[in-house]
Length: 139
Image 1 (spheres, rainbow, N blue to C red):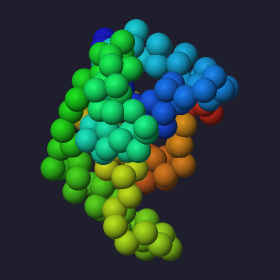
Image 2 (image 1 turned 45 degrees about the vertical axis):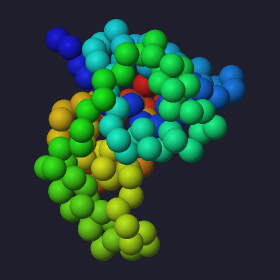
Image 3 (image 1 turned 135 degrees about the horizontal axis):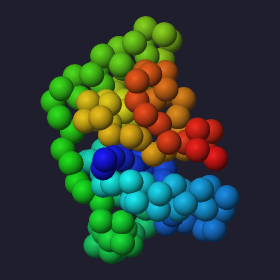
Image 4 (image 1 turned 180 degrees about the vertical axis):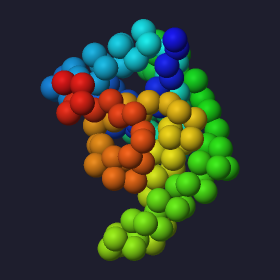
């Protein structure tokens, strides 16, 4: 069975950065996810990567070995993200605009992708059925 994995921006940032323990974990996890099936990204994750000093062409080239599929965030997922953000605000969250993590989590949840991330807290809290690959779940 092929399993698809949405890759959070912090994983891409890790593998493009200096050699750290986080980078090693991210590389190991990405390699396993490639064996399992497709890697996926979306516009929210891609826009987060634009903060790097790389041009889009350089970024695309640096990640080409992963053969990452680009996928649109479905309208249904965007709606779920808004609902999750509403729960966050009711629980005392201060951010008035929707957080990118809600769009990423809802996209993975709606499409039944696993989510590879080092930042599991918000995803676990607002998308409890989401299959997470984190340093805590996959050391």
